[in-house]
Length: 284
Image 1 (tube, helix red, strand yellow):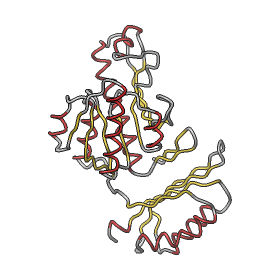
Image 2 (tube, helix red, strand yellow):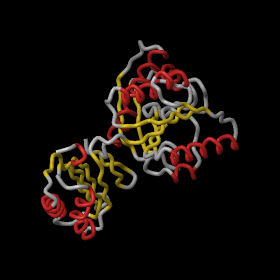
Image 3 (cartoon, helix red, strand yellow):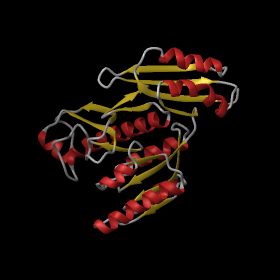
Image 4 (cartoon, one colour):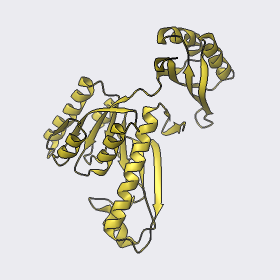
């Protein structure tokens, strides 16, 4: 079989008896072989979630035809894609390099199924980093409401021009407008130093050092109109103690931010992240 015949499928619908049997039967009808299968029934919302990887000799149209009766019967939201297809991803940055570097490195190393055609930033600091990885870079200063609106308009134009499927805020520090967030709902991910929630501003790790924190970490989440309250995709934490300097805490925190954001992007690119209201279902 060719790689084009290895499909990833996701299904979301109201939970009812017979769904798994019906989906499996449709796969058999298409001559398919299930190579990976995960499912979850949410007691909170009454919704059913399923992710499959299927090898089949049929083309996409034939496969869709085989699945159509099941999709209609259970009123499913569903998606079919080629396993491992790189996801068209736009990266937004400010001045911090760690998350951008990790994403670009893992793309080049083949460790992340993304295709990053552009890095957009409100500062020019990371132009050299993007150039090192051979990724186009643009910067636009954001200093007031008018320039912020212009930057968001440029982002939306890039989404259209490059057929972008995911936007990643790789420590992009500007607050986005509600209209912008609504336009990209479900396909924009942010990283936040979530285990320092009481420390706001430009230097949270210095504040953490002063308060003697024992845990620092990061949360990757979907961006919504509610600032830093979108559905959580991934979280990581590391224990620290009083011997750590502010600089060491920052370095540890940045490692966690990079690791957490990259993991969230990886899962999203592999169709492993499904929304269940205000939370996520992650099929690892």
